[in-house]
Length: 190
Image (cartoon, rainbow, N blue to C red; front, side, top):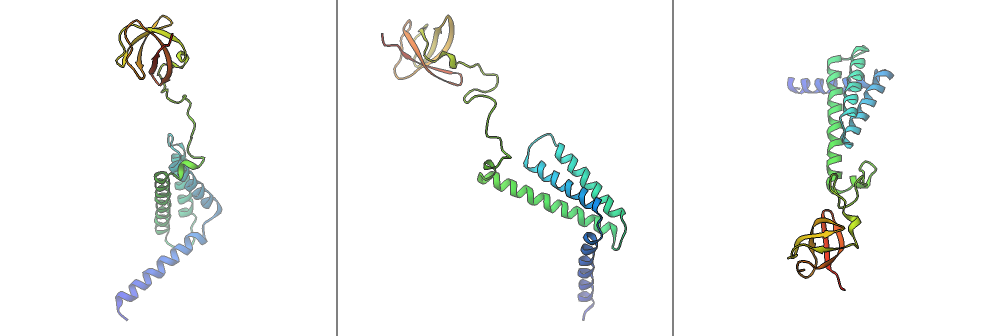
């Protein structure tokens, strides 16, 4: 046998042995800290926020790794710390890839992770005036609506848009619908 083959087989056996020692001699406290840290990091990946879960996950993972490194036992503690860090990075990258693919394909929107409701009613952004109370009311055009212009409704001037036909100045109009800040009117049939 060549020395390269012997060296490679020795390294592979040593690597496998370190993995066995890493998990075989891990105490309960380090396993719990590492596991909780990993779960918190995965939660941070799937839920946007201020990083509370991420920071707590990193701290718990570091505590778990430090506890494992200081526990003693067989094997090289530096190599075992590197293995745990590698495992942590691989699992986080896989979770991120799953999240990215799921959100791109729409699978993630079917889970409870994504909020489907909105605190603001449809068509109205926060800070936008709500003109829905004008629907059905009548007013007078102050200028010709071709198709947009100004109308006075309940003594207040509004920018409006005529639907269908142009409306001349000083005509009676009715509010048909409101689309966000667009007030759509039609000429009243008297």
